[in-house]
Length: 520
Image 1 (tube, one colour):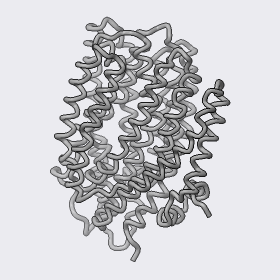
Image 2 (cartoon, one colour):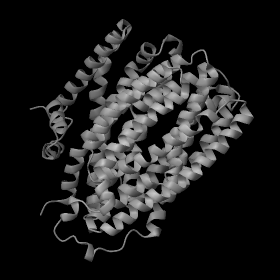
Image 3 (cartoon, helix red, strand yellow):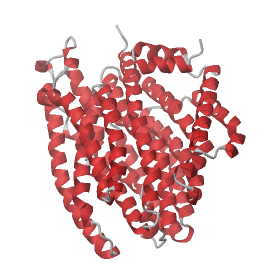
Image 4 (spheres, helix red, strand yellow):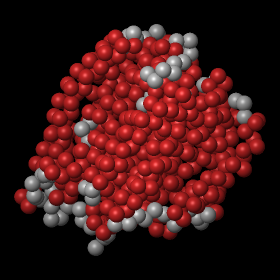
């Protein structure tokens, strides 16, 4: 009999490359926009501050009004699929869509009220952007639901196609609308059009599943609706939704934009806002943006085999760690090696101070990956509630440190607040998670190989001084990437078991990965 964990990891290996490809396209689009939009507002600091604020609203609102459904669907949909219960699937999905509709009404009312209050207290004009923001957030929330359904069914190919088509449209329309003088309404309107295109693609793929709650995965021997148990109990849902909302609040506060951190706390100025926003935004699009979809795919994958064989969870966690380290350690190395050069060439030398920040944020984002598989395991085991006290303490800590340090230290205070909160909470998080999961299995040796192989790129550090054009930057990136790949092959980064699972996935991208990283 085939090992369920082995089969699911194989499906994960097949779906992950398409998920990563989709995020590469989004990351490139985001980097381009994050680098170029400040140039349009260099002489209009107030509008740029408003842009930073509204960009954060677009990022934060889905986390706060998504009701934790971005975790609920990938955790419970695979379980219901495995049990062969179409009625429960329909109840879960249509219940989620209905709850989102209610949440959007509340979100729209709060956005209008909060925006009006901010207008009166800060003497800035936000009302012209209300409806485009409400439309964008609504589209994004429903797009998230469809994305989670696609990922839970390992249907990531359509997600990649949607991104390959919509992201170039997003970038092109943004600059077109800015040139036409549409301002921030054009910026967010272009993003709304892009999200609508993605939503249309995914809805076209999943509408039959939404209507019937049943797909080809229900045709497994022994599955059947007549034998299926009832849907997911409310107590199980609450054990996942409550800690998700607390965790989302923590993320929203940590990602507070420069406009709020500096203007609100008495430090005004375009440079501080732009430097902090650019450093965090560019590093997030280069690294952090890969994490959420892979996280969702991992939750769905672990849920698939956890319901069949809970003992295999640690095997899946170890495999997930290897994927994250292989993907993000080289990107972080590139950020430390060339992040400042890339920012100056893409944006301008006047933002040179953001260069040092972006190198720090590269390390920050890769450090956070060590906790991602742990949270996936806790979500899968429905033990994520143990993290609520830690998250609440971190929320209080970062808010207190922001108010204490930023007025006197500015950007450096914001960095100390962010890093200090994460570092102090790390040990406690690992200890509590280890007890809840039953031990951690972090592949330290594999991480060491990744770091060693990626560090080979620093052999090119002396060539940095000769890079003064975009073409030179691209050439150095390619050369650094080549050195990393060569080092990974020599160190035999992928073990025989990893290579076997990738080979069995049948994905063209997986085969390409094998050809690049595996030494014959």
